Amino acid sequence: MTESITKNRQSPGTLRAMIERAYGSRQVPVGDDFAEEITHGWFNVAYRIRLRDGRQAVLKIAPPAGIEVLTREVGMMRNELAAMALVRDRTGVPVPEIDHADLSRELVDADYFFMEFVDADNFGIAAAEGRLPADVVAAGGRELGALNRELNSITGPHFGPLQGPGSATWREAFTLMIEDVLDDGRRAGVDIGWDHDHIRRVLAENAKSLDEVREPRFVELDLWTKNSMIRDGRIVAILDHERAVWGDPLMEAGFTGLDLPVFGDPTDFMTGYGLGELSPAQRERRRLYSLYLAVIMIVETKYRGHQDMTTYDFGRAQLDLLMSGYGHDPVRR
Image (cartoon, rainbow, N blue to C red):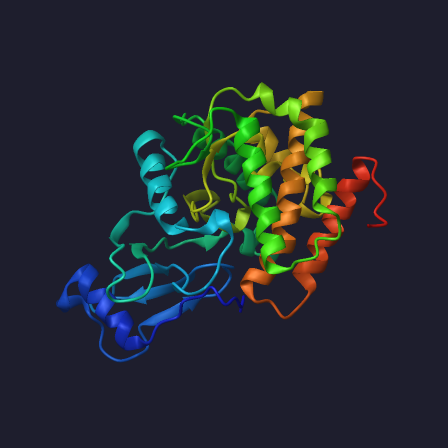
């Protein structure tokens, strides 16, 4: 089970009250075995719910009101709802239908929503467990790339958070994103292994490449294989849209392996996306996005309450690798 203090688990009685509000009293299940936690996520708690008539749904609940989260995670469930509405309205990318969203915080101390249960395999998990043939995995990677490109076809009114406040330029928006996570780390006393001004210098030295991005595009940020569902060799749903922003499509997770090989070969994804060799400016931007991801991986372990240092150590190693690529000695401070 992926453990985190942000997981807002609820009692069967509270879950029944939430079901009644969403689906009516006739769908409230009998007994206490109607909810199964979906355990592979890191942030929200999610349940697979069986309604009284046998139909299934998925319930996602945001973190408890008193738990501190990263700056970029404040109000993130509302961001996900907005993102899913954009995807449904402006693309053909498959996303689950939202059955009911409750932002009142009357039944629990957080936002929550029920959505359609997708009867399919988690693509990333099935691939990792060897349950999919190699050709299906490759084809799935290409399909994810094509779907991601379609998501990126959505244009926005500004750079930065979907619902604002926004920035006029991508350089400004991305700089704010970096500053937010550095400040989150400072506030929580997280040692990222490098002086924050060192990270800022790397950004300043490469920030000109960000100015090439002139049109805000919908960027999922979190479209890994584990956030997709596959059935009969086809991707049938994209999940977890909560981190979406208006920005540069090169920031998408599928490109991360270009800079950090541990994330896997992105060739199939890029083939499906229709993107070949990157220009020097694109490579500069892509490395900055991986730098941002590495800092997040380090800092968020504190906000998740992790006792195991594995994820922290992994993030530190990736940040060192990136800083070495910029010509900086990993002997810190």
